[in-house]
Amino acid sequence: MKLNSACPKIIRVYGESQERNIFPLPRFLGNASMTRGYELQDKREYKDIALHYLIRKPGRKYADEIREFDERFQNNIHIPENISKYQKLLKEASAEELKNYEIILCTCPASTNSRLLHGSLVIIDECGMCKEPECLLPLLNHPHARQVVLIGDHKQLQPIVKNRTAAEKGLQTSLFERYGEQSFMLNKQYRMHESICHFPSRHFYQNKLITAISKPVQIPQFWPNTSRPVVFCHVEGAERSLSVSTEEGNESSKSNDLEMKEAVRIFRELRSMRKISQICILSQYKAQCHLIESELRKTTDDENYKVCTVVSSQGNEWDFVILSLVRSMPEYEIEKNPSIGWCKRNLGFISDEHQINVALTRAKHGLIIIGNKNLLQCDKMWKSLLKEYQQNNCIVDALTFVPSFNRMKQNNPQKRFGATKNRKNV
Image 1: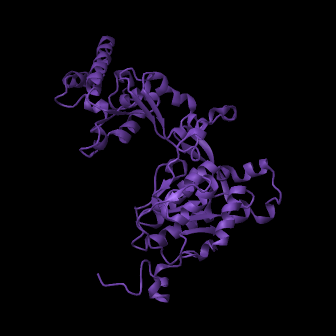
Image 2: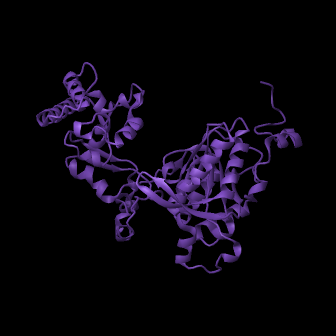
Image 3: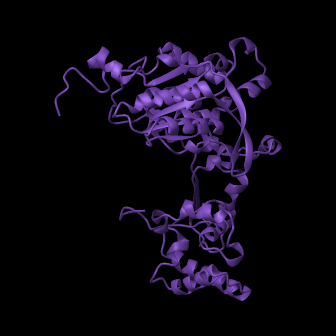
């Protein structure tokens, strides 16, 4: 990882279990999680700033002794006295190394590591996603800090609490949200086209977001409203319930074949326009992500794409985002005056305003939403978005959106992506 010479000296401290995945003690050898951890972290870009690599770097005071222990442990030489000496050595080496750095990066749980020096300033990033007990760990373990800074957005992802009772009792409310009224809002956004930003600003941030993009972006001519690069593509597909496997075991999820086909078709049409490169397909359902990814692998050689859940998209951005909402039902089954319980059962995640805020704010130049507008009218937030999109001529039947690029060129050469009448030869 290359840092500017003017940047403060930074070191990354991982949790002990993560370090053991890379440099296991004898009793951890053969652990099934070891391979996953190695694949995830054993990259040169991390080695340059990771504490557990730096203390083993040739020339460091304790490096030779540590590597000698590592070699013994790889040979599964298990002597309790050796492990005790090794752990003491790691603590001394870490303390020696940490003195050379101005900024220590770590997770909240890793901040309890006894090897860490007491900092004068504690900054907790993405604090809106931290459970309150997690957030308290660095505060309690660094009581001499002169300042504490919480950074985050409690209007976006909340802490993930799977126990419903715990969530209802308040564990899903972060420390950041509790202090939300006293926060200082950074109200300039540099990512989204102002039309993409308009609804999130109005609905989630009381119209306080200001678009501060210095260089205007030319909008492709395929949008139904060529001044607003947003569109809702109406699809009346059928949702399916199924089980998907995760690291924590199987979990129930949902998919929608028709939405998958439209998402893949739109992706391929966008990619045929050479200037459109970064495209991400989002869904709140893992089953839908797996379905879309599988179809892309079968039908295209293009590897320049990203398919992920809304939760995992937090903190990322792409030129274009295609959002598949999945939930659907025939119009005759939709209740005219649905109860809160009915909406929760039939809309699920897509009525979670925190997640939808994240989904609607990942795109820089174009946002494409695929879903069933009839069902979405049951939710106050979606009803408001659909009304705004309808007023701006941004709702279409999915099949009519993004006509074939080759057909566009044949029908109207001047309406090519980025083409103008006065275009010069280059």
